[in-house]
Image 1 (spheres, rainbow, N blue to C red):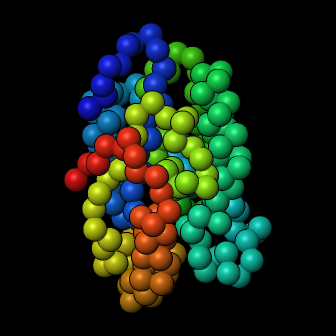
Image 2 (cartoon, rainbow, N blue to C red):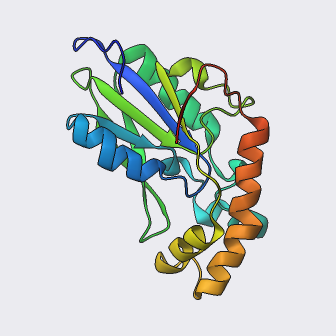
Length: 188
């Protein structure tokens, strides 16, 4: 999958897709199995903390405006320039980021950045990635609704599915309409 990788050069790979497309699964069960030393930086670590969101932000959590994209871009720019950085992760049990959970050094050669909005035109992140992949799967409200229920985001499966339709589907459409997919490789 990784083309023209020289072991002495650090590469940054972007894995994006709509909600429920399997980004995290792909990173953990395909890339990290093939490249055990790869480090993964999840965009979810850049969620704005729940305590800092208004009611609309909590309702629409996962929408582009509920991420601190300026900090995300600054951290990725620093990584690109220095080959190092400290990054937040996202802990589903507390439903918020955990600061400084991921550390990248110059010895780390394969860095994978995973998230929904990596190719949004207004975020202007694409130039920071050496390779760009988009997992091209259809939106599945049932699957996402079940995840919302199992993770405790909603207290019933029905509410989870409703949230998937009212929030995640809107986010999926936003991604597809507002991203720059030029020079992106599609994964089906």
